[in-house]
Length: 497
Image 1 (tube, helix red, strand yellow):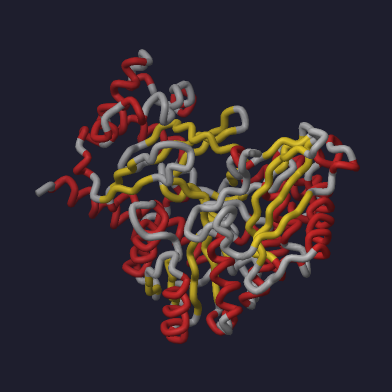
Image 2: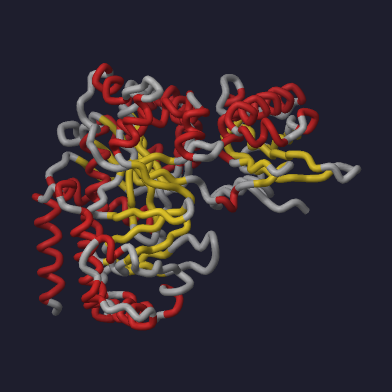
């Protein structure tokens, strides 16, 4: 038996049920976390000694910000897994998740149930403020893949923690099996006031579209969505919202910024969605705010739980986990914006999101929490005449009226060369169920993508010669084995052959 584990669990459980961690001083909290990790984690103790750092000298945030960054290369991969955990004991954790391995060898992430309660607070923020699940009986349908990956099991556990706290939430776990998802929604959905689908955006859209072709009336279930893993466009949110009969675009969905390394780091709120939709309609303002010609995921976060910093346009954070992370450089491209700075920036452009939400008849989801924004990974970007072209730019073109009825939203882009060795932008697009290829469709899609690229991407508009701006489009049927294999995590780019 491990009495210390019992105490650790009970203390975390009590905090989850009673604490309001947003009121904590984040600067004090992150220094306290450092001191605890320096005293209990063998690998970090070794790391500090190698860097010549005396932990007792780190007393303030200014001191903390002098600490060297840790990465997978300089820390995680150099120590035995057990030494990355407190007391050098992996059995202080009760669950191990595995990263997807999309950028290399899979990584193991042990954690204890107490680590889940911090993440459950992020789910609670979504279910309470956006979905009003404190007073609406809710069916939570886990559509993330189930197994060792972080998404499915972790999400199911967090939903169950909310139920234990008193929320009328019932969780069911069909995973990414569409047949089972349809079955549980149709058989169990009528017993609840609302149904929440939780999964990756492309898969959820596939579920919704496939359900419609089978005659499933999503509007009967007051459907809500919780998403993670990919950046979505606001056109995508509007499109999917229309198909499920969404009644309030700010409150019917939420994206999470999560990683296998540390769970959920931040979440969309009605306020962040309202702001993001304004920025989607004003690309010049978005470029001024974010510094790029693409719209990032924009979420709010609790700095007393996950403390963010920036370095040269990338993010680093500190947070407690089975493997505690101090100034961890995750490498995501993005930045942080204070609540006050965000509202000031918007006010200078004549926009007040709080007024918009209040006029919308809602009062939940407005908190003075800071914002963190994160772009999709740069490995999904292609360079064309020196212009960086992002998947987010292409996606908007495919979400235009008429076109969105023809396609699933999945595509693969690459730069190819013609017979004269001149480059051209090539895009393979997946057709929706029972939709056939035609020259007219290809031309319409090419024109829409070119229009949106010129509108959203100033590099494309200025760097690429007009004669080379129209992409070459090819269409493949649903589930094409070469470009769109079923059951495989989709990649939006590939190297030219």
